[in-house]
Length: 163
Ligand code: GDP
Ligand code: MG
Figure 1 (cartoon, rainbow, N blue to C red):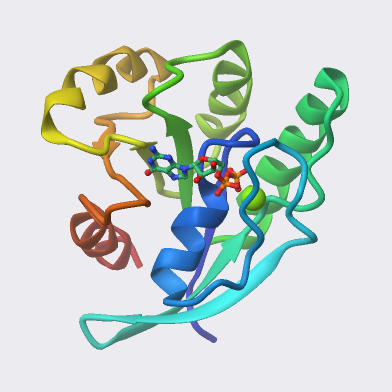
Figure 2: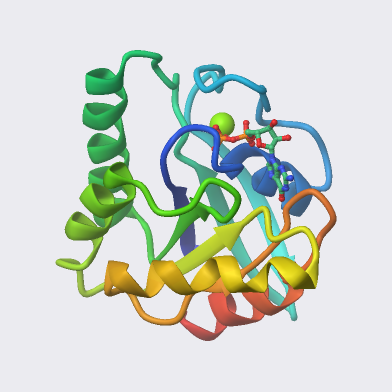
């Protein structure tokens, strides 16, 4: 079977935008408000002659804070159980939040590779926004912009290196 890569992170960080960019089409629903992806969504990806399955774990993202937290924990648990590589996405415009810390605490306990990805770094001069995320204890954060494509090739390289 192909390796599985799961994207986790709190609502609105850009998981579905990233997923659609990699899929090359609009499969996952992107919304300006948190709360609108239908379910876990899968696409097949090929990069450097390596195939894998990419999952947007977004699920039906809820609106109330306590439900968001419990669902994020559930998503992280699904990723820990089913993925070969976990992409943990955070928001470089909004910065580090308490829910990022909660998910990071779960992900630090797995032996599976976790790539910490700071999305919404739309131009190089925002690169300073990534350094706070070292606090998560998940290694070097990688900067990407799912909207304009910055850093996506480097991230795909890092993903397939970990299979
Ligand atoms: P999800 O809830 O994590 O799946 O996030 P979405 O993919 O639905 O995106 C949430 C919002 O962030 C939308 O308004 C997107 O257009 C926006 N967004 C996603 N990626 C980027 C990015 O790289 N840069 C900027 N500026 N906005 C982004
Ligand atoms: Mg989504």
